[in-house]
Image (cartoon, rainbow, N blue to C red; front, side, top):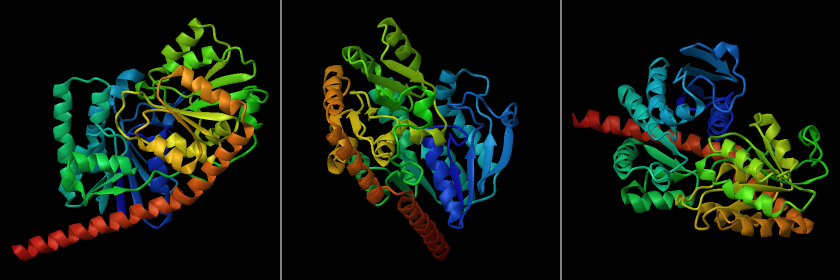
Length: 418
C-alpha cells in the first residue's frame, strides 16, 4: 500500500509529533508499505540545523526507507511566531509538498494543527482516495481553554466539523477522547477508533541511575525530580518553581527541567528571582539521550494546567512507565491519564498547580524507596502488555486497509448507480 503522512514536525526535529509519526512511517516501511512523509524543513527544538536544509524551499530525501518531501514554512520568523502562525501556514506548505509527491492509496495526518485536515481533504479529493485523521489534541477545545476569542473558536469549530465529516476514520489515543467526540457529535460513532499511542519498549528500558547523562550533569548523588519535554502554556509548570522553593532545605533533592518552549524563560527567571539552587534547567536533548534522562531520575513529572478540559494522556507518561520510574502527575483528575495511572498502579495523581500537594507527594516518594520501586515495576509491566509499538501500528494497518476497501466499495456503488 502507498501511504502519505502529513505532519508539521518530523526528524531530525525533537518532540512527540516528530517521533510518533516517524516511528509509524518507519514500521509501515518495515511491513512492506511505500511511505511518503510530507513535512517542513527542520527547525523545531533544534540548536543547530544541518546546512543541507538551510535556504531551501523544497527538498526530497530518503530517511530509513521513508521518502520525505519537505517544503519550507515561515523560515524568517522568530520561534514563537513560527509556532503560532504555523497553525495556518503549514497546511498550505504541506499541500504544496503533497502535490509534488506521488499519488498514494491513503493519507493520514497528525492534528494539531487542525487545519492540516483541510490539506488532507484537498489532496484526497483530488486523487479520490480516503484520509484518516490522527487526532492527538482536541482543537479548538484546547484553544478555548486558553481563553481565545469566542468568534475565532466558533470559526475553527466549523472547520473541525467539516474535517470530521470528510475523514474516513478518526483515531484518538484514549477512550476519554472518543467519549468527548461522541458526546459532541454522536454520528461519528463508526468513524472514531481508539488506537493508543505507543512507546518504544526496546529503546526506553529500565537502566542504571548512574549513566552518561547523569555523569555529564553531576546528578549521581542527588535525588532527582525531573520534567522532560515542552514547557508551554498547557503544561502549567509555574507551580513547580514554587514547589522547589518549599523543598529548598532538602540538600540532596534536585529538580531538573529538560526541554524548551515559550514558557521556559519565565520559569528560568522566576527560579533566579527566588535564588533557587535546587533546580537545574537543561535544553532539549536528542531522542537517543532521553532514556538516560529518565533513568537518571528518581521521580518523573507530567503536568497539565487546571483549566484544560480535554482528557489528554501526555505521551511522556508512557515513556516514564517504560523506563520503570514512578509517575507523578499533576493535572485535572477527570482525565484519562489519572485513570491510566490508577489502573497501572504506576504512580500518583494530584490536583493541578498545587505546590503544597506536589511537595507532599515528592516527600512521600523521597522517603519511600519500596513504593518507588513498586510503581516503576508496575508501569514497565503495563506498557509491555498494552502499549507496544508493533501492536499499535498493526491496528493502523488494519484501519488503512478497511478505509481503502470502503472507498473502493463506494466507487463501485457510484459506478453502478450511473
